[in-house]
View 1 (cartoon, one colour):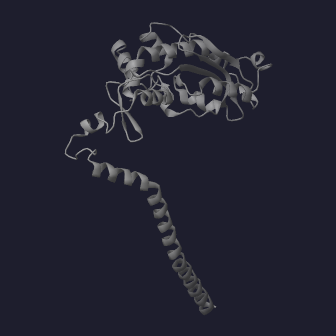
View 2 (view 1 turned 45 degrees about the vertical axis):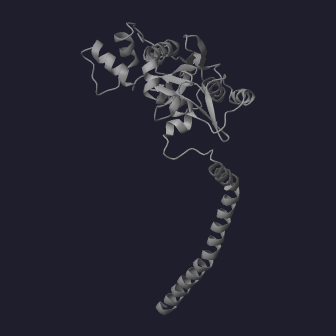
View 3 (view 1 turned 90 degrees about the vertical axis):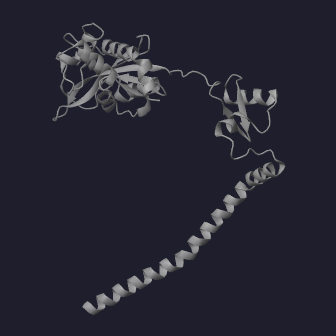
Length: 287
């Protein structure tokens, strides 16, 4: 039996070696075909560069990069510039054209503007035997503090702990509440493509089962600027722990919130105020 197993293993290794040897020419053929396609694709650009070099319109290599970008081989006409501006959705400005690429100078660049932003806050209840958090109420406000959404949500599992002391949720609030999927879709439509502000926002996104681009998330519990300002305003601040929204509002905004039951609309508004207080420096630090 050992001899039979040894023979079989040798046959298997020999078969694998044969298959690998047969696959090598095929890989070479694929590489050659790919290189031919790339050469055919880049042939017009290469010939254009050779023509510019022979005609003398090509910039000398000794010139600085700045002069190369600031001066174009051929000046575009006013009609071409207007069509390019219309294509890019921009106003006419100082620019240059290198081949088919439009390059804008630094002086012509527009000042950086911020996109629309909304703030969100959620209230949770405990469901199941493990008392895990589930969405029960969600609120969204805009930059001016106007309420865009304030809705109770009917959990998909049986509620075992309403957490009324903090959430303010009672059984009667969820009797005729809309389903989780309906409210979730409304939330997704409101926050799509916008800067999303929140305090410990990962908890809200987890119960909503929503993924938002990290580059559009602003969490006031982790921003260093707010922590520094809080440390200056409150000598008893523990820098080893993220500050609570109540503490930030009390010591920075001089406002008392979350006295008793929490209101998600109020929490979202004060979260937006904290973000707008440091908005310029916050956004500049992300560039």
